[in-house]
Image (cartoon, rainbow, N blue to C red; front, side, top):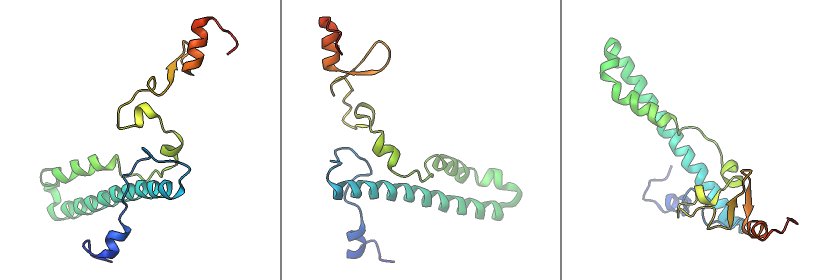
Length: 138
């Protein structure tokens, strides 16, 4: 396994953040890089949780009946990391990208050309303008 300072390690390290923000879906190299970064991030969280669990097991064995007092910090850390330790993949995030919620820039759906209709379904701005003008063709 290469050391963190080696050129082999730096060549395999992802250069994109683990998100689909700003990724052109027609550019397959950037799309695959984003997918790879998301999977790597999920694996890192999973392995971190595994290491914490192994340390917690050692603490339980070492402390015996006093494990409730001595291993509390590790137990709390384990339960905190357990939420994110699941490997979910990238397909859900890729297919269900919502610009207002998932976009770190904080733009809402109205600025993206969407507005909410009275029945709760998202409508485009031309439909809203046509409704205001009384045009019922849409």
